[in-house]
Length: 116
Image (cartoon, rainbow, N blue to C red; front, side, top):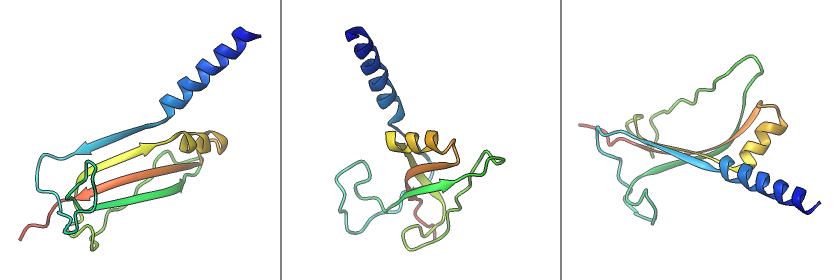
């Protein structure tokens, strides 16, 4: 019984740590759009960041999802410089429970500075 509990604990921690990750992609071309207020103390300090925390719904027949980046006040050029995807344990659990139809997404992106 004690050995079973140890194995179950090990598997639980393995799932917990593999389900939480983030991936950041960054372009080497162009300058990042600056943040005039500089309120952040993390990797994105001095950069205008757009954050999305949403649940996307995907049909059984489709395998992908497209989110369009448009020109806005926080993204004046409409072009991406840096993008970060974050997956959490809760997001993975939601995907498992709904058989992959709903997925929780946390996305941060920084646009390029518009050129004149």
